[in-house]
View 1 (spheres, rainbow, N blue to C red):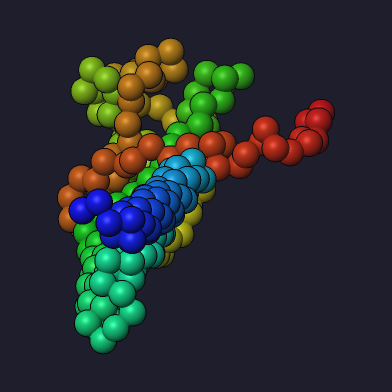
View 2: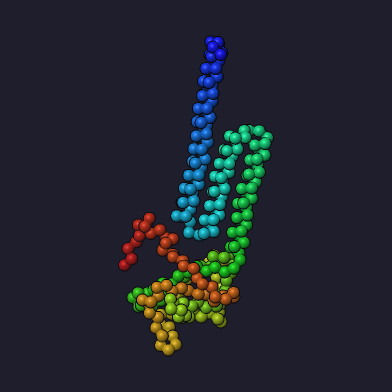
Length: 237
């Protein structure tokens, strides 16, 4: 073992091993960094969707596509590195791509099914603070089918139910994704001289009577969609 040539060979072999180890470490670091970068892009994409997308169906649809795409890139990177470019790795990539795109197609089919079944109405009521009365109601049909509204009730926080709109003889037809603006009668009178107290409308909700029964109207804040903080607004005289 004291042969100088043998010691030289061992020294060179040790140097080669150290070089390979350093290269492998650098390659591992690059692969991990690349995967973390893809995860960061996916996080930013989902974060932006949560901020900008008000419609939950669009949020789920775009989010599933974005996450599926970045997961595919991560899996492709890992497989190419650990398996290498050969027929086996190519087959694995095809299987993973098929699985991911199958999940996306299933999500789209599910959202399309949800969009066409049941009844979902969004809306809100406006208050005329000058006259201390309800001014108008906005309703939006979020489903891909027409909904017939027979009446619109206001349910107060104390469970008092007030009929704001009565359309039994002429049902209101809400087309798919249609927004209806309903002006309320300012001179309407209620039984037993009941007067709606505008100050007690906090926590109230709208209820639409449809062909499927009572449908609670989900809160629809129109002003939140207008992004008025990004515009120079006209002065109303």
